[in-house]
Structures are given as C-alpha cells and as structure tokens.
Length: 319
Ligand code: TMP
Image (cartoon, rainbow, N blue to C red; front, side, top):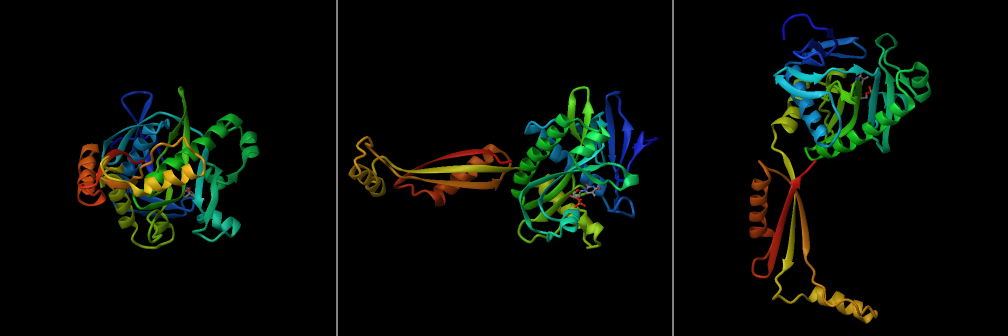
C-alpha cells in the first residue's frame, strides 16, 4: 500500500477503499507490547496475520457471526466494511494467563470453570483499564443491551474458535475482540491473530503467540509461521461416522441377550434388538468426497468385517 493512511495504529494502517463505506486494512510487521512500551518487528507478521485473521473471519461468518471482513486483496491487505469502533476490548478467557493471573494470583495454565468475559476501555493514555458494566454505562460507550450483545457474541465466538483450534492441535487460552457500529448494526471488527490471542500447543502447552515477543521467549517468527501452517496451509478437517451393523443373515447373541433380559423384566413390547457399533473419526482431507473415499477404505480394511458386517459412512465439515 502506498499513499497516506487515514489512520495508523501499532499493528495496522487504514487506507481509503474505492467505495466510501469500505476501508483497506494493511497489516504491518511492527509489534508492540505493554501499551507501546516495548517495540519491535516480527518478520512477515503482516502477511501471516492478514491470512490468519481472514481464515478466522471466514470461519465466523460461516457460523453466522456478522463481521467487517469482506476479502483479502493482497498479501498484507484486506478489504473491510467501514465501522465506527466501539472503544472496548472484549477479552474472553478459558485458561488463566497474563493480566488475569497477575490480578488474582491464579497460576498461569489453570483452566477456568466457565469462560470469563472482561471489558477494557480502549484509551492508550489510561493504559486500556479493566472496567465493568457500570463504568461502561457512565462512560456512555455502549448501552446495556449492546453490552449484553457483545458478551453473548464473545461467548459464541469462543465456542466456535475453541472447537476449530482444538481440531488443529491448539488450545485457545484467551483472546481479545473489538466490535464496530455500521448502518446495519454491530459487527465484529479489528483482527483475530496470534497478536490478539493466546494459543498453546494442545499437547505440549508451548506458547505459539505474541507472548513469545512480550516475554522474550525467542522463536517468535516460528510461532506465527506454525499458526499459519496449521490454520491456513493445512487441509480442512472433517468428522466422519462409520456405522457398522451385522448383516441380516448373521446371528447376534448380544442383541438376543438384551432382548431376553428385557422380556424377563416383563417388557413384552420389544420384538428384536441387534447391536452394532459407531466409530467417529476427525481427519483432514481435500473435500467431502476425498474423505468419504478414505474412510470407506478404512472401513473395508480395518473397521468392519466384510464377511459378517455392513457399514455406512457419513461425513460432515468439522468446525
Ligand atoms: P491480558 O492477559 O494481557 O489482559 O491479555 C488478554 C488477551 O488479550 C490476550 O490474548 C492478548 C490480548 N490482548 C490484545 O490483543 N491487546 C492488548 O492490548 C492486550 C493487553 C491484550
């Protein structure tokens, strides 16, 4: 992007778009932490975050969340709807970390009984303080019903992202959202990326987000690349179910035993019972047909006994 931005933030620049109701967002490699006190650059971060954020916004739009995102236009830039940002950071937490651990002394890594939604007032001069509903009402930045909407959207987005990330081997520890007003209501805005989420490897708890930069842990670029690899480069993930049944001609002693037990208890209404098994698999694949084929082969080779059993495969997109 060339020319003068309309606005330059710590990680992004906003440029005018062809249409007056749209903006171009340019993702920079610059990184800051602690309200700008720590500064640096993360090689290729702009491109990686642009692509990662686009993947998240597309996922959320498919799940019915209204967002500002329209499309990626080049490596560092996306086209978005123009919004008036509500000056609140909506933070959703699943596992204690960062400022929550500091504030309450909860050890980092402790799973929370239920997700916690917090609001921070976006004001650099004040250092983005934590505020509650009463402060928000007094500040007049959002009405009580808007606030209830932001909280509900935060929790809904948390459910969608948690399942999606877990399928890709990542724990969503916490994340920050921003929303904006349009003529058409409130929409999710800003970005969702390793800058704005804590993402830990599900097996090792290795930090794969901006905490590597904040805390000088090294391997910052590699962590962003790894998230990009798992979310953008990897194939889509599907859930397959294989229902295995005994062929009609094969006797089913297990089903017979259940039937006899019921009948001996005086349950005379049951006439036949046959027992099968259901195998659920989560796997990656090119598309539904590819996964259907792979799983059918697995059922033929391993999951079902072709002499005695039949099977049926169903496949659906997984988060
Ligand atoms: P915190 O534990 O420092 O309050 O951060 C909570 C989450 O919000 C974490 O995923 C990082 C994200 N975050 C931002 O995106 N921008 C910020 O300015 C801050 C402080 C946190």
